[in-house]
Length: 427
Image (cartoon, rainbow, N blue to C red; front, side):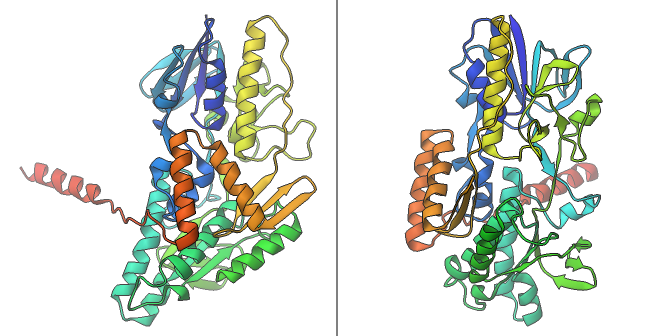
């Protein structure tokens, strides 16, 4: 019986596991450092209080409970030995016949990791709830003070990075300040919030056509967002952002400017690109190690393309399924195939009922594009329960502009733990 180890429970790993599930000649172990599968395309809606975490995340064990040949381990993989064919995690070491690496990426701060404390990224539920806490807290802080300077700083939001995530965050903050919170405060006017989207390149949304990017800029401006291109951030601290000689005082800075891959590729000594992504063969395996496959954001696949495939959910989903089918073909004595990506386009939403879509030569924007965006995202949600509640909340918020997840969850447990430890030391 062949043992397949899958590292990562995202779109690639989960879809590969499903195809390999209940096969009598294959044993699967899926390892992830979280116990849940996260629908990352909607993570910004958790950060902006439109959805709760449970509506876009499902326990991995629950998803794979019906597959008797799959074991799920919550653990952190620390290394891979291609020669010995072993995967080492914090709590165990396992031998594999086939290995699928789908570890994803994390935010990159271009050598300034100290910025993360002041400008969190958006890749996990923990980061999303922290961003939600920061965004909602500054409105409360502005309400408590009569100092105009402090109010202005509290109501200034800076988003660094003009890709889809940055655009969606900026649009959502613009919508919250101008509609959702507009009547909730007495001493401040949330509509006066400054939202500044900073992009180092010549325009936002560089992966979209220039026409759609210009339309997105116009729509963001209508929501009160200041779009600043060709602006390089040189420093971030607790007081705001530095752009060359210019200083922007802001209480909330969010990072959406760059990513880097899991360090596992470099630790294995295989070929990687400057982002740390593993360069793969046409069948998504690693050169000289045909038993190791890489998928999703961790893979650099550029065969027959001018640029590598982007880090999108459809890419990861298709690659995960393809790798699983290739493993099944090989175990059945058949030859492997080469991966071919079916381009399903790209989407970005800009506030409520507005989006842009690009698929080949087809380009859409506005309400129709938003309806398509809604349908696609609901379709790809894992469980029926998630689909139902997300649809319900979107319909409700569409008609009344309310957001039901506006809870400020402070990190009081840290203070409790600190005080408890100090008491133990004193005792």
